[in-house]
Length: 296
Image (cartoon, rainbow, N blue to C red; front, top):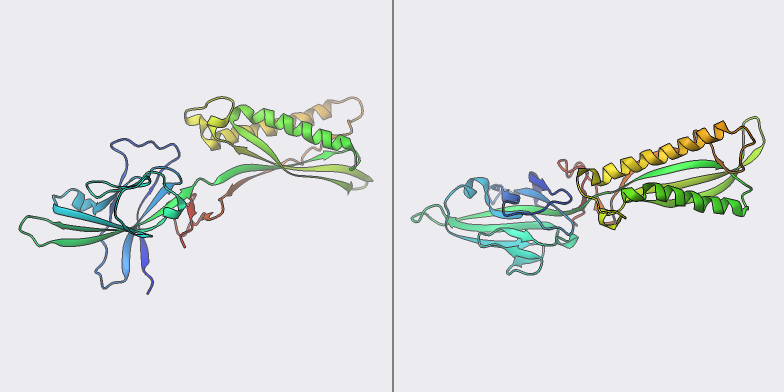
């Protein structure tokens, strides 16, 4: 019969978390009797390529108790963990620590604790189970669509205008460490209501954040969070298109050949996980926005 796991404690490490001597520590939860095929497993979430919390080989009760002659033995997805290496460490008190957590390290980890509560007492054995997941922040971005009255679809002016528009939009969000990417550009002939045919450009582009250390200016502090930078970028782009509508509306002379069509700007917020990762609210109710690695 397949082992079933119940949700235990959970820790999600935020982006930019830095460890100190008093860093987060995760304790185990006591399981059920061995003949019952249900194990209480503590779920731990570790940001990909980051250091994990200290996963302790004790329960909260035992952590506050005196243990005589304790011994700790860890087993992971690949079997017994026997020694330290560049990515895994077992401390002298039995804590498991990962230095650079990879998706392949995700899985079930069990620590077998052996100890005596007093010198005269009988040795006790306690298995503690953890399910450790690698997770990534979702790839979040805004997707915009906009339509322009255009030159004939085979005209080189449309191509030049497309390049110029992308340059302007990219420059708008550059200082926010955001980037604009063209997803699709198409020219179509559109039959207007009670009017003839006109040429229209259909633009679809995304606005996403990049690492702040890759931007033109170093950014630190609360306002450098990806979501805050993207929100500012969205506002700048919406203002830019609104200004285009105002400029066209104030023109006394005939309209230019290529101009933004009022009311056609649309925007959606998109969260996507990288391949092999997924958002599963039912499986991870306390980490609903985590792109967790799918353990096979």
